[in-house]
Length: 255
Image (cartoon, rainbow, N blue to C red; front, side):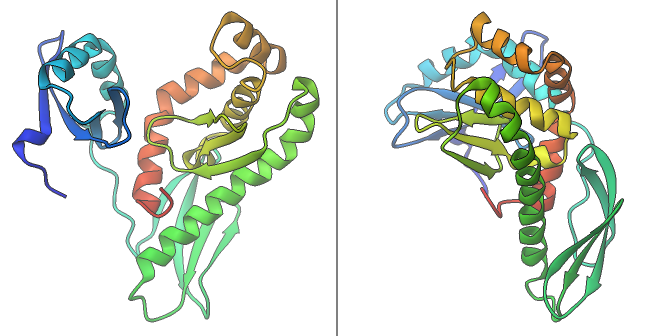
């Protein structure tokens, strides 16, 4: 997709650089919202918002924006694209796994230790789409398996349970709890160590008790996961890499 020059805003950063931010109106937006993903920065705004207001908003968040873009290492070499028949590797549950390909009568994933094989039937006219779908489903199953094992442990401690669990790619968040008490988890957590996934799950479960990030909330988290800061820091340092890996493996399959 290409954009006109008017779809971008340029912001001079405190360190002397320039950041280009994609701006996009949204009919249901009620406020300005700034997000950063491996693809760059994006500003969503309500219809009728003046450019001066958007620029002022960006200036107010300039430090945060520059820091987040730096975390994503957007100037680094891009990850290799997923190609049918071409072996590659990626993180799974915090460990590097080798991905290979094979032919079979129906599409499936075969997982053996440190090796993952995508089995696809011929012809491969839709091979890449099938492969991305297989990986997305496989990643979701990894997360659901862990969550199913942990929920019976943590729900009694918190004395509250989510009404549903949804797993999908999230642009900037790792998890969220909606007003119906449904937990959303980022599919990229399948690539992270299980301890990081467990932290995000406990984080959202604790929001069933405290809907903000007050000291009371963090006390809840610490009472269940005393080492939560270690996992939170791991996600801050490595999270952008996990999201970038997920994006190149499944693209827009499950957004």
